[in-house]
Image (cartoon, rainbow, N blue to C red; front, side, top):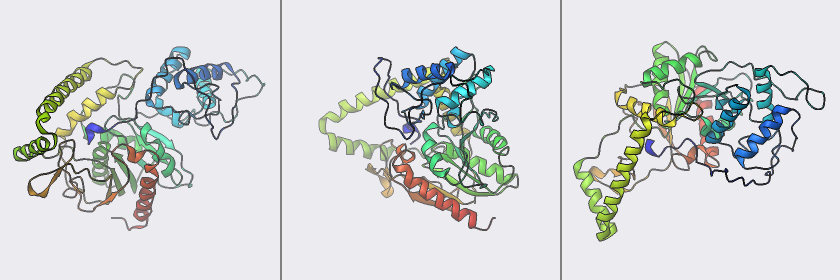
Length: 406
């Protein structure tokens, strides 16, 4: 399943110069009021391919995603010699707020065109910047225990923004992103080290438990290690949420099961199967070569270092030893993908992996519950499926907070 994880869907390149009319948004059109806002409007219109962007329009409502965000902040750095991580878009999703952050950083104090300051300015600008912790939603439910969610294999939290908005209606929501996602820092070499650093930042917003935490896809493995380290330090973990998280290393297919799959494909595809198999094998070799090349290739500091993060994460998986953890945990996963029936009545999915109702976690987490949600591995955290997922998570959190602590 890790192979199919996507941090964000690749959007079409708008470099052709074609622009589309401003969509019907909840926000009214507000024109730029100072030079920084006017510059940012130009950047947004160029990158998003949208005409007449207003300074109160949300980056995400206009179709923005992580790849565009990286290009946006590279342009900001070139224009103003200031650098921000793309995660600031959760604090400042509009041009007005982004411009306010830039103006404070560069020390610009002149008034706007109307002689007044920009409304709704920079209550968030002075927030401390973390390496891992991203305040994705401040929470609308008062002083409640925050929820921490570790990003997936590529270390980017932007694809979790829909979940953050829904969970954040009741409590603060923090994402935990990988070190080295952008800039010149190197990724963690082990999951244990990553978990330790994540905890250090978590404790700066919540010093003690009970903690509510989780992880998407491979990030759930790191969340699992966070839970173990917190309990070893005497803290309580009220709930661990795994979002379709696999084991670090699953059992390989037996030779007999591989043969059964091949025979099934021959029966299904007839004489053309061999040709198709050779074609797939060549494609696999090319993809492996491409990945091996990009994992060592230098990357620009103005792009997401997805390849380096992925390579470091994959290298860390076989070195991580899973130990039993008896705390309260729930696995949310999409419907099982049953492609081939093999020996022992087991099933194999299209990634040639054995299928388990619980992703094979119960032997390490005896208290694990499993809840099926709509969508697939990627779309379960996107609209509209994320609404069902968020509802289940909220219910599990409510139950965890009412339960007596261990």
